[in-house]
Each structure stands twice: as C-alpha cells, then as structure tokens.
Length: 415
Image (tube, rainbow, N blue to C red; front, side, top):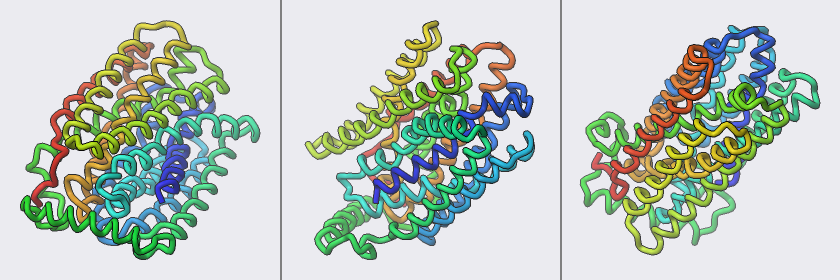
C-alpha cells in the first residue's frame, strides 16, 4: 500500500515540479520577467493551499480512496492541459487547476497512515509517503529534462506526464482500500493486529478526555496544533523554495546547462529521499526501544533544523558550484526528516480527524508555497542576486526549528 503511495506522491512531485525544470525555456518563450516567473510558480500553491481543509473534510467523510482517485485523474488532465498553454495567462490558469486537483493526495495519505499502520510503525509510514516528494523532485529533473531533449518540446513532456498520472489514478482505485478488512491482500491476523492497535489508541484517548468528534475548530485552542502548522510552514518555506527556484538558481547563479540542472536536481533531492526514509526508520526503532515520542521527535527534528540552517548559510558564502550542490544535498537530506510530521495528524487527532488535521497542516505549509516563489522573484528582481533569497530560506528554517521543539508529540488532543 505504502509503496504505491510512494510512487503516487513521486508522480505528484514530478508533475508539480516539471515547470521548474522547463522554466529556462518557458521564460524565454513567454518573455517573462523574474516577478512574473515568481507569480507563475506560485499559482499552483494558491488553489492547492485553499483546497486543503475542504478536501480534508471530504476525506474524513467519504474516505481517502475516492478522493485520491479523483485527484489523480483531475491533476493528470490539468498537467496535460498545461502543455497546450499559449502564454503566461493560460499557463497560469492551468497551474491553478493542477493545484485544485492535487490537493487531496497528501491529506488522504495521512489518513491512510492512521488507518493502515500500527502506532509503532507510523513514523516509517509517514516518511515512506512523504519521501515521494524529494524522489519525485529528483527524478522529475532527469525525466522532464530527458523528455524535453527526446521530444524536442517541453509541451510534449507535460502531456506525456499528464497521461501517466491519469493511469496512476486507475491504479489507486484498483488497489487502495479505506479499511484493511476490505483488501484481499490482508489476512485475519494482520487485520486483528491493526484493530488491536486502534482499539488501544481509542481507549487511551478516551481516558485523556478525547470524545472522537469530527471537527477542526476545537483544535485551534491547543499549542501543539499551531506548532504543527507553523512547523510545516517553515519546512515548506525551504523545500518549496528549492523546488521552484532551485533549477533557475543553478542556471543563472552557477551557469549550469539543462542536462547539468537535471542531474544536480536529482542528486539534491535524491539525498532528501534517502534522508527521509532513514529518518523514519530511526524514529520507529528508537520508539520501539522505549524512548518517548517527545524525546525521539524533538531530538531528530531539532538536529535536522540546526543542520539545515547551517547548510543554507554555507550556500550563501561558497562560490564554487559543486560545493553549493553538495551543501544543498546535505540540507535536503536532513530537511526531509521533517516528513515525520505526516504522523502528527493521527497523533493529535486519531483516525477520526486525521484527514482534516492533515489538511490544516498542509494548508499552513502551502501558504509558504504561494508566498515563497513570489518573494524570491521580488528579491531576485530587486537585487539581481540569490543571496537574500537564500537568507529567506534560513528564516523559514528557524521558524521550523522553533516549532518542532514546541510541539508535544506524546498525546492525542482532547477533542
């Protein structure tokens, strides 16, 4: 189940980031200034962010399978449509459409993590799911660059990617189930193992005063809810900044050609994929050894924050292109440990509200998604340099670090 979700999220990020790889060509074809480039890169995140909480409520009501399938088919069609764009406006509209249709994937994955994973395995479940982000971003650099080179057209590459995504939607409908008991690959022992874990969680939550109501507003009074939201906002300020502007930074500041951009992107985001899988494994093994959730998460995510801040500061001062790629790879390796956050909606809200809390978390994170590309465009346009843009990423990492140390990972909130 989670290997399929890993592939799905990878395709999600290949489609989402494809415009960044093709951007040096698109920018010339559409004759766009840096400020317009930033606006175009942010378009996806406007609608993606706004849809997060509504789609989270739909997931909790109708189940992740239906929402995820509809999401795949819709965003595949929108990606293909973006390959037909004739200028800035039509591309902008297509990117808005991709944002609407992609919105259901990650909250649905968080819900499936709550349903399908034993409490002791959700760290790995969260990071396998979220590791599709750096894997897709890394593979997307090579695949989209390769498609552009082989077809001679960025438009054809977008259409091919869109068709592949629609086929992924059919695979989701065929394989994903909203309850382990409904899946032909699950035997009685496995189902009972999960159900026992869920029953124990529910009993513990009831003792702590949780009523299991389907709601969002009651969570707003808890510090951990806001720490979850601001932590994901800070994380995405760094990740989306590198995802959207990273290829153009390598092209303009470091002089890389399209092929070198593709391979450098693969190395940077590939390091993130390895780091995320490793982070989830360490977290679950440490928990299994008896450490508390707070000790595990605050230690791992605190280390992550310190390394990310230091690495980004280093990128601003090193002139050598290869050293910059190495530092960005280290940054991405540790940054993706924060993918453990996809276990938090089920920690704070249980299975009942994992969808809507995942939507709220992702809404907060994707505020960075639409603010960051515009901010970087304005910074680069005003200064003619990427130095202050990189320092903007440092500020985001500081917000992330403060939040991961504030959040209480030990108990479900009493809602």
